[in-house]
Image (cartoon, rainbow, N blue to C red):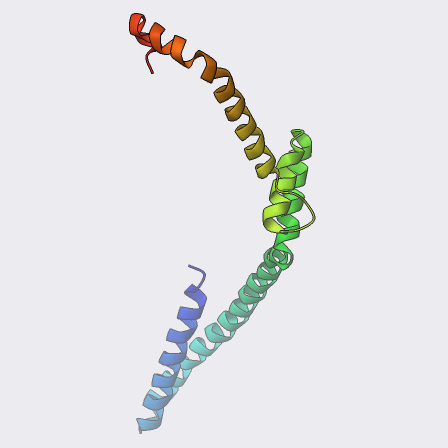
Length: 148
């Protein structure tokens, strides 16, 4: 649909060219006047469509430059959006995580903090489980839900 005026202009230009060639081949003045009158109608529509197409292109280029302004500093825009969302929900680690992966500097990776914390919990659970491993194994023989 947006290219419809351009297509119509192309068809109109083609018809005008064919009519111009046709007029040059005619020898009868009555036919020439008829063809020239019809060509005048095509010229008016061609001029109007040219103006319309120019205005549409101008609007499209203006919208394109406005929407592309987001892409100029995309990283900063994304970080600003993440900062706003993380402040509203009190999740500062989310902003630090985004800043670490988008900027790559200026902050520690919060995911590594949570990975170390998870490793400490796993080691604590393993340390607590080891002394009772034999007892739980023996109890598992009597109680099927406790079987390893």
